[in-house]
Length: 310
Image 1: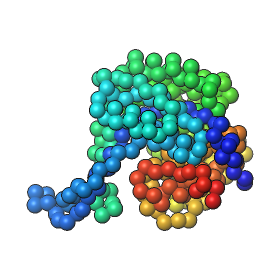
Image 2: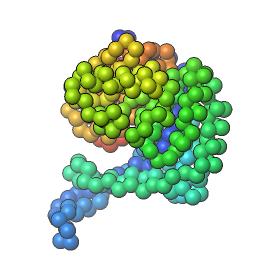
Image 3: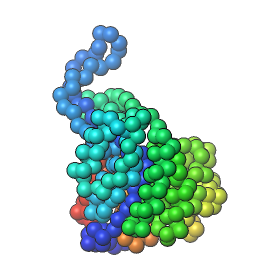
Image 4: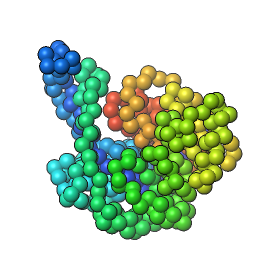
């Protein structure tokens, strides 16, 4: 299947809504075990900060060559300011609400010998009045975009997602959702949701074989009135369940270095290409390829158009 042109991507705007966060990495050397407990001592030698959550999704959109608008909420704190500075430098069109009572979400990863040894999360949930204001802004931004992507990390930023899905579908825009939790009813009416294996099993239970998976996935898709359900399956590739049946795309064979953020890359690529006008089935192999490229990089990474088209 032919990939769209870079010029087509440049004219495409994707509206990304969800939970933005700060990904912080501490890298160091591991030379000994602590005398206080049986844990490694990491002597931190380097620190790095990147956009996380829906910020990484939006960054993947602009890295590919499309335009991204980000609608989210941060706290009125130092980490919120750090997120704003990263967004300002990224080329993402930013629409950030501020909640003085919110602690900006931070994921701290401690890395030793090129392996993640520990992750610590710092977070709280935004207030309802801030989210109501965000919903009003969503309706204002909607007409300027060709696709809408909701990145749900379960941090409370998508309380009003049902209203936003309805508005986007009424505007004839594709709506893509990276879901979270065990209740998918809030995603009803979307174009496609993209759970991984563990996330889908949390909703429909374990499947015995491929036929059983097909039956349960299609039942969920029809119950939620979705155009499609895309199951990401790591080394097994991806499976798209839609009205035509099921389409399996095998994983792109390469050395897996880090799977962090691979799902962000897949859904960002899918949204960008569908915003151009490609069908879901046309865009899927390219999204799969993008995911295969990004797992060969460390941390929350992205893919550019040259890498994808090579």
